[in-house]
Length: 488
Image (cartoon, rainbow, N blue to C red; front, side, top):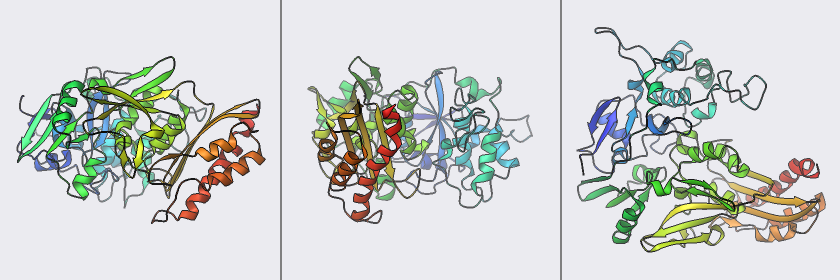
């Protein structure tokens, strides 16, 4: 093993003597790069965002913004990071650096007051600035603009994980909608034409704690057999919160986010297989709307900053009853491919969860992929009921996949989240729909059944009565929104 290093703003920097649990945020600040700030330490404010060189979809490299407060620095061994300080271009000797176009627009349009959140906004904005094909016309309107897309093609969802408490968002939006396109001389734009750094095999140990990244899945599974107590991380969007907020530490952390065997996306004749370590953003851009129910899920799953690191494998691996992806995957009748040192097995997601944050996954196993069977049902919807429209934890999540032929419901699959100790299928409601007309009378009767599905509880997000009411209402909403499309 070579010494663990990260290339920061073009300069190789050793990770040592930082502890294996040290986040990228603390690693940077310890080295004087204090533009990266800690606001929440759980990935909700974006004050810590930095740019990372990742494999691109349409170019060899994409500049991706991630929350530096969540990911251990050791996970970026061999990788390339740009901070807010690294965006500016060095000037002539004795002159200050030239502001990056994004920094310039934020300054001239009043996008900063106290400045605490500004570096994070700038990094997230820069990631969107360098997104290939950004200036294409948005489908929502003839001129490419709507409430969330500017005339320059800028997608405001790129900033959905960044919070500002004093400036107000209008001048920040104005800055985002004013940025142009990168020039041919822009070094970060040129950098996109080269491949990102290859994942480095890492074994970084300090104070009896170890961070590991193996080169292959087989090597990883062998380590898991020997260390079944190890914590497996991909984007670290869940484990990072445990480390920061609950001060949890692990003797051994194993990273799987760059394993090639977990990063494939294959479209077969009877199924789509999605690698468990592909980020949600990568899945979204590679599928490009070809799975409509997933396309509805992605914009409502946390923020772009989180989606740039979070994975389906991680979301299912936590076993959370309020995770956003399980209801959708249940409605899609997905299965998970579990792998250990002895081989693989495929388990329907409906049989995967066994209790609160518990599953059939055995010690030494990890999720290699998620399989979505084909063909897909034509009538789909994902309803996430939460206090905020975006970047919030759901009180109730409902996913529908319904096949209506000649006015009759031939097949119905409904996934629920937030109404039981595990994500569940609404089996009684599915039965109440199948074989009956897709008509108001059928749907109203099925909605009454749906209100009784699960075992919803009252907590600080919603009462049990509210959750039950929202279940029934969501089916009525689906019918109202799709009746004309189905009949036509």
